[in-house]
Image 1 (cartoon, helix red, strand yellow):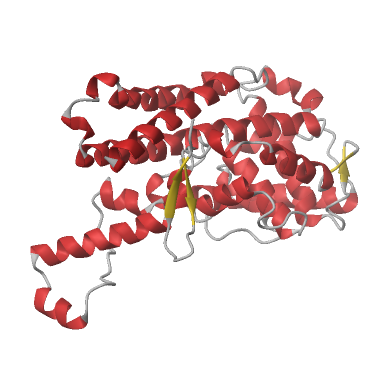
Image 2 (cartoon, helix red, strand yellow):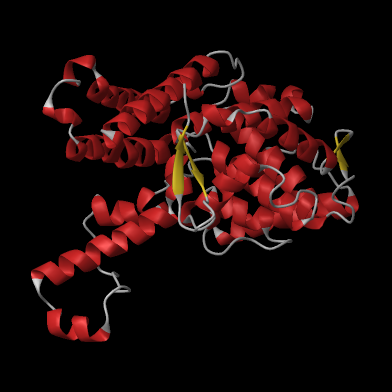
Length: 362
């Protein structure tokens, strides 16, 4: 009964959050994410999963504990993780926000724990190859790594980093600040975020990949006696999956579809806060789109200041301090987002250890 109750509650909360995100996106006039194929297709696919919660199923075997758990797994892995990974960065909004957050952390402008929601997201994606192309960048490497993850070659990304350094150190702003970035970005494709990179349980459950499973629970004697038996391998794989599932509880609690909207809203609002909108007009009529212009200004001037400026906090571009303005806005923006809008259940640490889940009520 308890599993059925939990399942019904979190199903309702999840789809309420998705509908709210779709509705709010329609109010952001400067975003074209609603017409983005990746957003439209995947949100439609996720919305179809709500059929598992139709009242017609309430009195049927669908609601026995096994089926309730199965329907939650389908929503978690096929819906929230697989489709969520496709939408959370469909406008490059995730990589823009996380590179900014990482840069602010590197410079001590923002501290860990200051923005809990961003800590959740940052920790969930800090090992994502598509975003970071390896280890997290150090100070002085933000612009270079950002352009590599945007599809540029090593040579081109180094050229862009050198331009950003000259701008930050010597105040040399190119007469056409978009020329080189537009040339290098044309025709480039970013690497998609793979859910298997984020969640080992996705590999175990959806891809049936147990190649790196390790037995951490049986004694050496039990291993020796049971090695190779079907029941032993089943137990090892189950225990390994459950161990990873407990470790990934916070990741699974984040509604990636809802987060995709809030990240997009932040990027659109940041352009207004930093006075970039007048400079982005030419991109509205080009094939590249406005977000490409945002990426160029963001990397060359905002990340460039965090990378190379002698005083990143107060370094100015267009009369706006590149450390103070975005950090203040980031704290305010993400601090205003209610947990009930992005977490469909909440992970907490009980006193005796382990992980407990608390339902987010509608």
